[in-house]
Image (cartoon, rainbow, N blue to C red):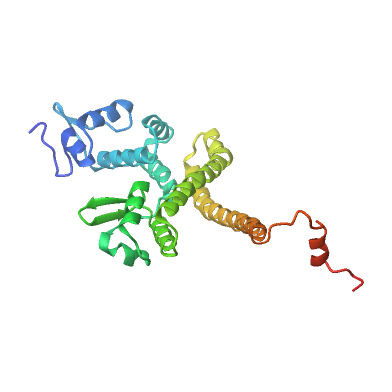
Length: 268
């Protein structure tokens, strides 16, 4: 009968939209933009299949990563139709090495054991206020940044005030965002710009992903190395201030006396 699908893998546009988690209006918009292949017409009904569903899922995945529909259209139109899916998957996978640490869900009473340090209701509230955890139900938590929550819990266990730990955590996120933007801009200028200038070649996407994967350990090691050096400098400054606090300089003293004591004469 005309208008009836030939198999269970074919469905009309409303079913396609529901399976993709979109509205019919969204799907029609993707069709009009050329982001989605037209369905097969049978009578007055267009039928869609797994290929269309996979394309919608790829589009949604790229949108979640920050790609605009216009940018996705460029990627599709720059690529032969036979390999458009592969290109889209490569671009989405290109950013995979930078996925944030996977969130952890647990009972609030298990937080201390999971973190390996004592916690308090005040500390939990401050973590929630900072966006590092969220409450998912009565007595249930989702830890959104496990590494920072663990280190914060250990800092509080050492005797630091929860509010001070919270402030430091927020400052760290702000400062490291600035550093991250430095590396991203470096990648954009040195790698991405050349790829765009070459016309977004399909073979170049794999090279982009390799560059992104290599950049992660380089950025991490550079940041750690810089932090170790600047932390040592900061501690040296702290020791000098500590020395002054313990033994303030006597304004009547000879300013060269300390240097003579610290550097004995060669005649002795």
